[in-house]
Image (cartoon, rainbow, N blue to C red):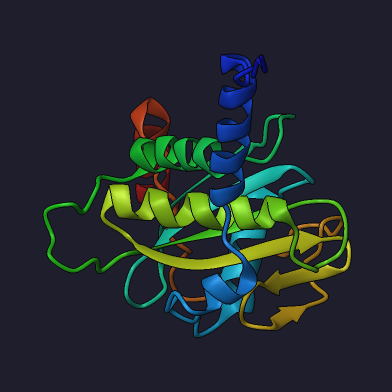
Length: 206
């Protein structure tokens, strides 16, 4: 008589969890085929976010742009030291978006675009961590009624718009923030919500 042993439930759960986690990332080819709108002036967007948030490695900056690529809101946060997982990244991005700007779920077609700048170690080549951020950004945009925009990495070598092949040497992860360009009107302040937002609005009105 032959006896067989079914795999333990713990092993089955571990295997299914690993498979689910592996699927929560986007390969560069998938990202390029997703029809992500191109930024008209990526360096200006990158420099503006770098000046406002001065990100260091492991810092993510999510920003919402209007149809003219003007910054409407932005928020930065530190990535927790845990395995890269698109679902966790999605939740973190969605939490920040809900904090700084109302959703657009009532619109039939999104008019505002969310972009993500992630400052990390290493070079500009795609990593599985990047793939998880891409998956998280796309899903967070869907749940908040936004268009999914560019995913940009910032390293010590410079910045790179993944899936587009566009990049530059400045700013980079170690560079000081550039001063805002002098113009007739000051740059719009990103919304932060709560009492801090009211203080900023009052200061800008003076």
